[in-house]
Length: 92
Image 1 (tube, one colour):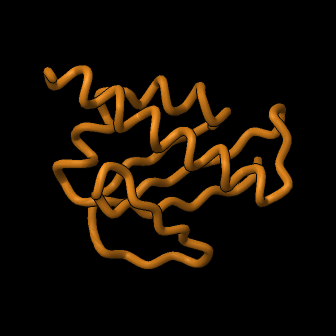
Image 2 (cartoon, rainbow, N blue to C red):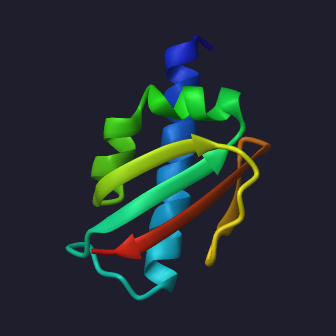
């Protein structure tokens, strides 16, 4: 598997997980969000390769991909291909 295919797989899994969380939050397809994704440097680098895809898939107005161990209110912790990823979003 090459790097591009691996990056696409990460983006698709993350998008599916975010869509599931959007549904749990009662959002509908037309609702736009501001999305923040927090993970380790390697994972963020992989996700940045498909940032536009993620933004379109989850109907995000803004996407912030960041590293660090920050904890935010309403942070949703996900596992994407054995990597820890935290996401938070707010309807705009």
